[in-house]
Image (cartoon, rainbow over all chains, first blue to last red; front, side, top):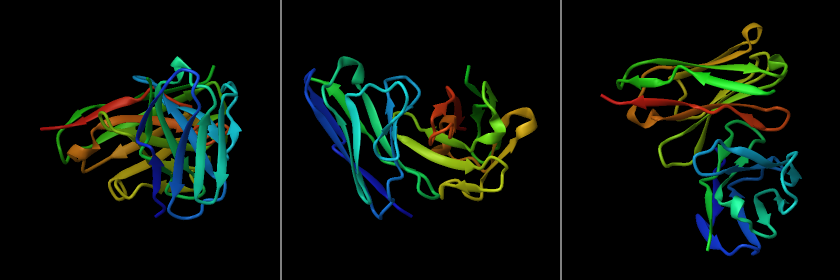
Length: 107
Length: 117
């Protein structure tokens, strides 16, 4: 099965900073990569699918890129409401697999 | 309004069984594939199972294969997860999530399953 890794496992940045999270698949998954945001105590929400397509209602400061095995989620200007754990998901075939998550805090 | 409501969680002893339900409303349930995802306390998300719109395609995570069974009743707008031979490590909040219209685009609020003696 394909394994998913994320880096870093956590980060702390200032409001207004740019933030980049990396997700890597152990084998190529095309562009079948999604990103989810889970705020503390809340249900996960889809942010991005097919690597770079923003889910409706997601702020434009979020963006995704990559293909094959290496993918990134970028927050162009970190806001207080972005404090959350971010997960990548590969869904090209079963089993679907989440990455271990990246916790984002405000410095 | 889109809604997914999970039920059936609770406390069960190791080796026991439990059946979770997820009732959908606000969309054409029979059109979309569904997933179960779980989250152990203070841990990350773990995909558990997938079922296609007409139940023709069903997949499981290796961690639950042979113990859990996913099914759906499109006439009742309902998704189910039959969990047998439960283990301590199955303790988690279980979410149902629909691929509406994108992968796991909408989630329920989850139901807590605690496996403990």
